[in-house]
Amino acid sequence: KESVDEEMKGTDTSKLPKRRLTFCVEGNISVGKTTFLQRIANETIELRDLVEIVPEPIAKWQDVGPEHFNILDAFYAEPERYAYTFQNYVFVTRVMQEKESASGIKPLRLMERSVFSDRMVFVRAVHEANWMNEMEISIYDSWFDPVVSSLPGLIPDGFIYLRASPDTCHKRMMVRKRSEEGGVTLDYLRGLHEKHESWLLPSKGGGSGVLSVSQLPVHLEGSLPADIQDRVFYLEGDH
Ligand code: DCP
Image (cartoon, rainbow, N blue to C red):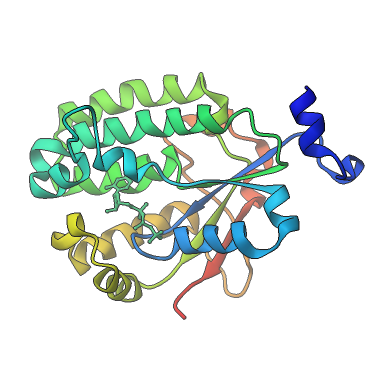
């Protein structure tokens, strides 16, 4: 309590929400999620005091165990062999990341991606590519719902969708040149884009920045706040 009091010294707590809010930042590979979050983190001292940034645990995927295995690299090198193993590990590391940030006191937590985009975008994509077979997706689904339902911290209050064309993301990916992503094609990015769209903007009707979510993960609709439909925001990011 002392350290909480110390950290909150000088902050007018009457203006803070009673419960911390969590938003997950979503979007295609290379759309600029990390840059967006870094900008918020470094924007102003006031923002820094209010917002806790939880980056995606990609470093954990690139350096596993004392042997320093790179499971992201293994996945792209042999997707049929490692898609399930990788998605399983992605989930576990998100749980770890959530736990690590669970006791923070800043009123807004922004997390890079979520277990929901893992399921609704990436697991769908690797299944469609036949990199995850029927048995593997069935195993994934058999634990996904019960585990997520028992870990309420994984369920956000809303989503921020950074939206750009697959061409833009492809160009940014080429500039960034993450070594593991050498084999990621424009077609794969198109598939991921289409899955983000059908998940986060199934009924996009021009102009509005507030969208509705449909098909929220598999059977989890009941666990999500009833008004989550009104809590998906998107930002156009082609420029
Ligand atoms: N990835 C995956 N399956 C997941 C989550 C991520 O295959 N469930 C892969 C896609 C990328 C890498 O992990 O190759 C990191 O993905 P992100 O799109 O989340 O992160 P970026 O660093 O590309 O995002 P940005 O450039 O927007 O910051």
